[in-house]
Amino acid sequence: MTRSFPDGPDRPGNPDRPAVAFLGLGALGAPMAGRLLAAGFPLTIHNRTRGAEEPLAASGAIRAATPAEAAASSELIALCLSDDLAVEDVLFAQGGVAESVSPGALVIDFSTISAATSSRLAGRLRELGVGYLDAPVTGGTEGARAGTLSVLCGGASDHLDRARPLLEVVGARISHFGPVGSGQQVKAVNQILVAGSYAALAEGLALARAQGLPLQEVCAALEGGAAGSWALQNRASQMIENTYPLGFRLALHRKDLGIALETAASAGVDLPISARVAGIEDALISAGHGDEDVSALARWFTETNPKGVRE
Image (cartoon, rainbow, N blue to C red):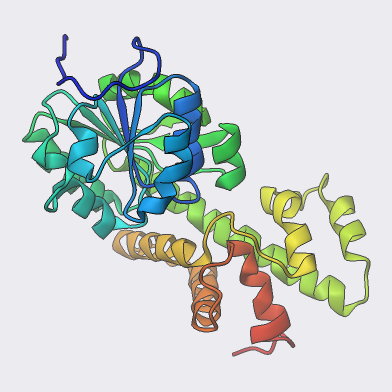
């Protein structure tokens, strides 16, 4: 199928690559967009906090004043936004993508939102002749910088085929689970596993600390055994040092965990461990730690509830 898109501003990049608009340049979005720019995709960017655009603009990306302006001459429109409302606003509010997007364009949504919202937005875009692929990612800021994210896709197979050259720049593993919304369903499962693994690591370190054990040595000894996990390998040191540079914001994980809990309730599944972690995260957010990495769960044992007293 031949598609025609309006001419946009002169953009550096490989003319054989489709023009991309990237909307949302947070902790994950900025390095993902940077990889696309480095790979030769002609790139137009927009972020609500405009200062976040400057480093990519210095490397050759074109800044757009609105999502509509960014989408006007782009075949692929990538979103990496914080929540359901932000995605809907960028697509359909005043100045949004829907005002200028060309029929035949494809929206690739890297955001983590509810499956129901993904399906509803896909339906609205379909009326405009625009495709939609839900493609939430996992792998943290490390994976975004290295291009090793795992991309969890839901949507039509032909849409995935069109998106694949872009997805292969940002992700090392691309999995297709079915129709729109199925990628978000798998991401909900991922966030449950993240909740359990981070909380278990924080709890294990609390016990090791209480016994006076050498924490770094304990973690090194356990990494290769049955207790080994991504969290143990990548987040134990900052839990031990009680410093939590941003990898994935605690407040955003709490939002994602809320989606997972709502999904489980709709399916009649009880998630007692996830519900408990959600309560701990609520306490930490109330204490002002919402903008720290999810590994700040360890603070609950050292600050919020230092003796591990049952609440």
